[in-house]
Length: 174
Image 1 (spheres, one colour):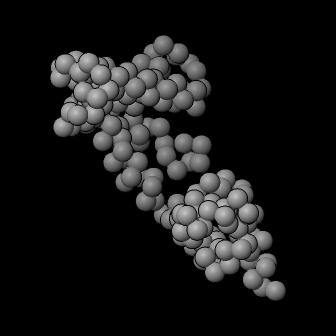
Image 2 (cartoon, helix red, strand yellow):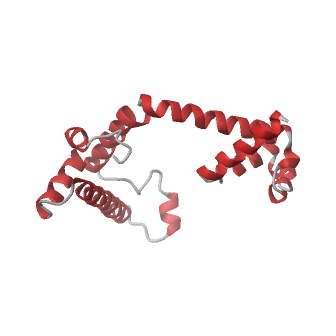
Image 3 (cartoon, rainbow, N blue to C red):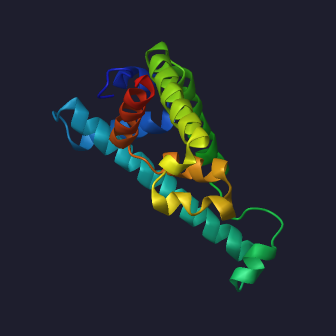
């Protein structure tokens, strides 16, 4: 929303659960700024999803007569699932985000840049593992170089990974 890639009206037209939550929040807080309403609607939607998952998991656990964790683990299928109605709404929301946000042109450039950064850093440390921080370097023997490099990169914040990328690009140019 804040990036301007999605519009509240469009989301409400296409995501039933959020539309219902927004309408409820809008009724309870008439005249409040749209951004506040949207955030409250999201929070309500998350509460609905969480409550449903907890209730349905409890119902499923009771239905099989589980008395222990071992009973739950021994059961042949997942017990912790959404109810059919809420699962359908969750899938609708997920599909909407995939169709309108995750694959939109505006993010395509960001995805390409992220892929470039991660690939360059991965290749750099694969070629020069001694450049890894000592704590990671010592794990190579037990975990394998590719796993250690991947774990190191996965643990980076956005700002740190960009800093590392800039430093490595400078080092490569020398």
